[in-house]
Length: 192
Image 1 (cartoon, rainbow, N blue to C red):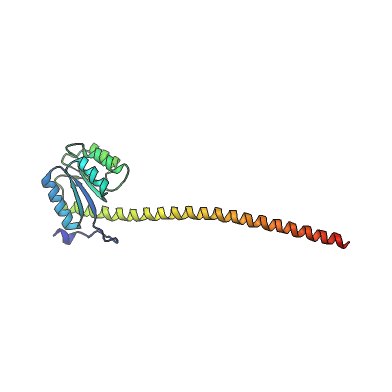
Image 2 (image 1 turned 90 degrees about the horizontal axis):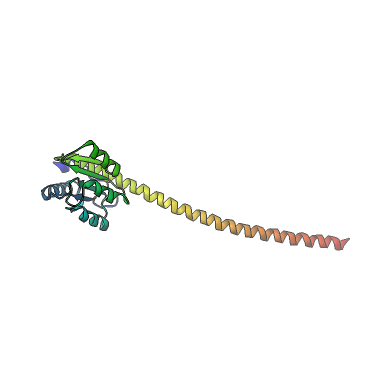
């Protein structure tokens, strides 16, 4: 049923969405993992601790991260901060005990959304699919921007080089004109 309802992630590169799930409850992690693999054909990594998540993400950065608030070695907000401070991307915070303060702090640290346990798997999967699509589009824009910057730098350097060459040519032409003017002047003096 989920696969009929879920849009497949648009992907021009042919890669499956890379998702990191950080959940210490084995049953929840397996259920979530099975659902994401089935509905999104996700390239999934599952970590039971924040430390394990950071190692996994360092070796193979995820496009979307799903973080449980209560982890054995650090809370989910600290993990969101650690994972997104250098490499921003969509993050979903999962919690069984939602508070407005926790939601605000999660968003401030870089979370894109918060789901309350038990959550609607269909809604979560749609949200993740949308996040992957938007993230990939933003990455394409970032890559284009970086390419434009590189090309701009090259154009500026080439322009400077061309200006120097033109200055040299102009100096040579002015020098040659002066020489010619002096010769013409001498010829005119000799004719008198």
